[in-house]
Picture 1 (spheres, helix red, strand yellow):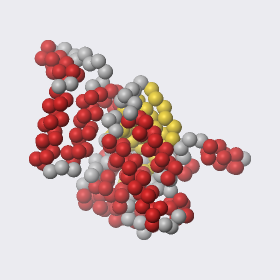
Picture 2 (tube, one colour):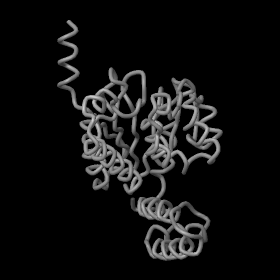
Picture 3 (cartoon, helix red, strand yellow):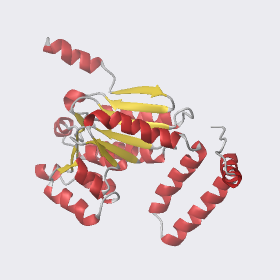
Picture 4 (cartoon, one colour):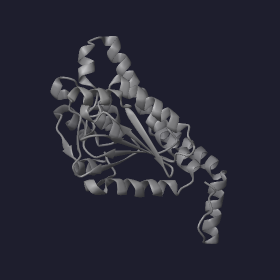
Length: 267
């Protein structure tokens, strides 16, 4: 029986996508392996995000994990089986490309964190634009416990939480709770396990109610300005707002405010 189950899992897609009402839910589908980010999983996610980024009918993307964990990070068995510097460099470059794609997509990406999120899995949460966690979720960048400092996860983590809090997580490998993750800025909302989908649906609906062009332009500007000095950031922000103001949806929104009515957006 176990051989049949193992074969069925091997034949199943690494990623499953469900579309409904403008929301695409991407589910990492290797629950038995805690949705580890193997080369194959990274390739599947990359292909999926590339396709969704080009799909104008998708307004929000939700990233979820099958099984008990959200994502336990890189596939350590795969990494140990190939002790080769070039392999490791390709693997981490592949992971970085996928993470960067999430933030380059025009749609906001919400992490649905129902369980464990460790190492590169915690990085994945930090990389997503928004995150909703179950009260039972736990977070850690625990590579240091194995002698491997979570260097690439530290990039995203350090841009989400305070420096001293991020560094403490990195050098101790300790787990933090969902409420601690919210307090530190790693996730937006924490709810009971039975309410996580309801909360994500409500958040997605709020986003979808806004003009797509404003969300896309705003997301792009937000991440670009974070890497700039203050003067350059304000220059970029001003130019983005000016271009945004020329869009019909913004003109309609401002006119609706003046007319004291709800805006009538085409999208």
